[in-house]
View 1 (tube, rainbow, N blue to C red):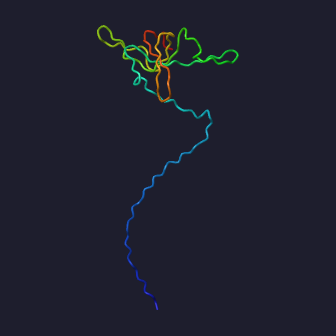
View 2 (view 1 turned 180 degrees about the vertical axis):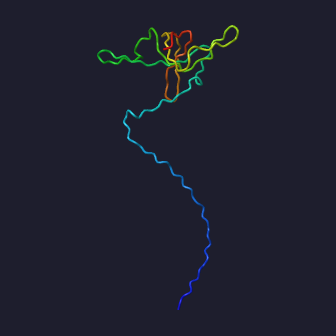
View 3 (view 1 turned 90 degrees about the horizontal axis):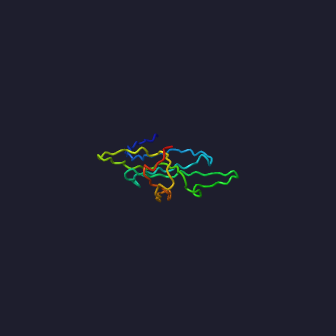
Length: 146
């Protein structure tokens, strides 16, 4: 005797398909201490401190001297006589002539300049990196562009 096999119809129900997002695989290589360096954040100083007229906002470039005996003398200990070297961070609009036209400045943002030690006004600027000392001076006090 043969058994009858009854076929039943199953209802096909579509289940919602979950889309999986695969995260990219990042390979981490071992780097030496010299290779790991943080890039300094670029701060737009012209938005924070806007110099007026023919004024400039500059940051002194730090120079250290090493004596013959190997002693390092930082620039903060040295007396500020003569000239100082600085990087220009922001510039003013320029000088107005008698006719009312603007004469643009000769110095641009990013230039390295020389100026007299006592020709500037010191300003403390607080940012995410900490406090730093900036100087504001007139373009006429600039001795030259390096």
